[in-house]
Length: 343
Ligand SMILES: [Zn+2]
Ligand SMILES: [Zn+2]
Image (cartoon, rainbow, N blue to C red; front, side, top):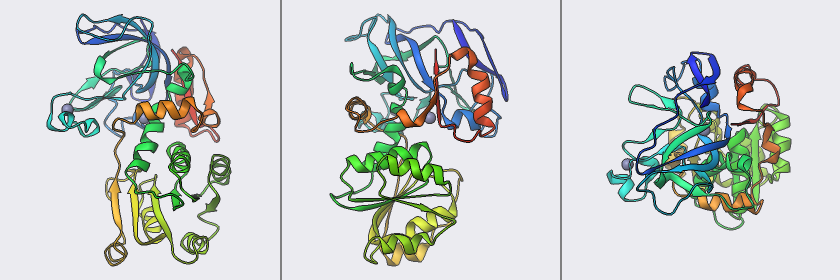
């Protein structure tokens, strides 16, 4: 098959790769679309230790079933599918309780690290266990379906946050996930959504996608502005989608007493938190990791266009041109959001 392989750090090659073997409980998927994730772009230079060459990256994908393993039930060749970015083991304590995102033996597609190498979907074919497959509604295209993983990260983060009808929410960071969080908060019934970022264009986009207010963090006092928009009380919930001390600090101070701060971004392994504000204002901090069972709901939201990805997809070039697009993303070309490769 053809594949885009990270052959050495910062070097991707499009060429022939062996067809993946298909186990009895697996299907072989003919990949149609696979999105380039920020973690692939950051990882390709070796800085994260999770993309050790040689590896075929890619974990945000969709396609059609080509081959069905002997023990597979309920799926047939031609079925349009997407799949979890993570292969959960299906056996451990967490998997048995449905907490597949916390699986003790999770292997992320397209990741090679100290513990495992799991080739991903920047290829014509990928082999996957049937337990991580999801059927695509007719209303969802392969490109939309390749966005379901980032959509599910946003929806899971909102699921982890106690949002009541009419609540005010602050979203710190309006990159890809932040823009999806804004839309998910709208679906969840928030009254007022306040987006915070440093880039004016991203704030404009956030407002087009459902934020009521955009605050440019270097042009105003964010905490004061949030208070002004909430009769001096502070926001009910805040979602931090960056993962740095200053933004987590600001997010915590934006909250009313008893509010919840959901932590999604993890740019830094450790950060400082304003401990006394958290304790004396009785804030709840919630971590949110990947997603857990939200795919069907997300596919439905995409199919009904309650969450839209059109404004977030910058280009859909063929897999053969993938290396050049990786480089453009690595060089942080302004205005480039999601690039989805046709495989
Ligand atoms: Zn990703
Ligand atoms: Zn498990």
